[in-house]
Length: 280
Image 1 (tube, one colour):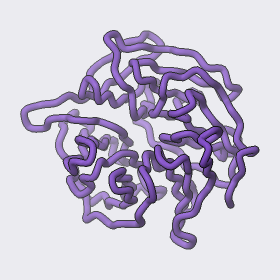
Image 2 (cartoon, one colour):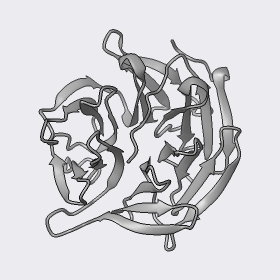
Image 3 (cartoon, one colour):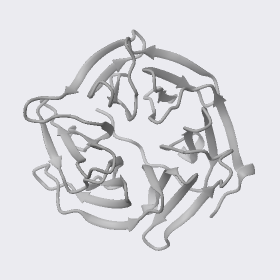
Image 4 (cartoon, one colour):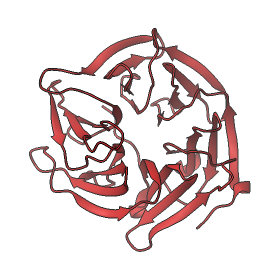
């Protein structure tokens, strides 16, 4: 089903070029800004800044933890933070080391064993991106180099057996199985994506929501129907560089995303139902 502009609701305005978005364990939406801000957004549309990194940073992927903190990717400081927004405390979760230099940490997700995998996009159009796995004991190692072309958004599959990975240049959606020892299996290409895809969100029944920085389009992919336009906006008004999406609201069917080019948060009531996101 393709949706129209009139179906989109503006939840809130006034965010600073937000890309990262996640649903906290309290049910609220959390977003990052490009100067080190973390925002909280209620489903009623109340927006507030709840944390700020001294010295600044660009905050990309956010992941909620069971203790209420968030793992946050920061390509400016080339690290991942673990943030307590209630006390504005920022603890380094992952940083560069002699064995693994971070370039552009971008987006992450928990795996069923409690480990955490995140994309390091590398340098733009340099095909030097990779994926990193953080074990529950804190050990950090390169997980896969099979998606080098600016690996961006990623998401755990509905059954937990692998992860979907988006590469942005050129646009490509792939699947990496998780092997029994926790390592990455052989890359399986699903489809090419026109433009510059940014985020991938998993819905039930095998549907994937793919948001694009360019063009101003959100796609839906399924095995039966392939890649289809969910909503698009050639004028960049209600859909304007949608970076990443989440499902929330009644029945987990409301698709919510930040419009990077418009400084606002949009909501679309859909027929799709998002899957619960793992937290540890």
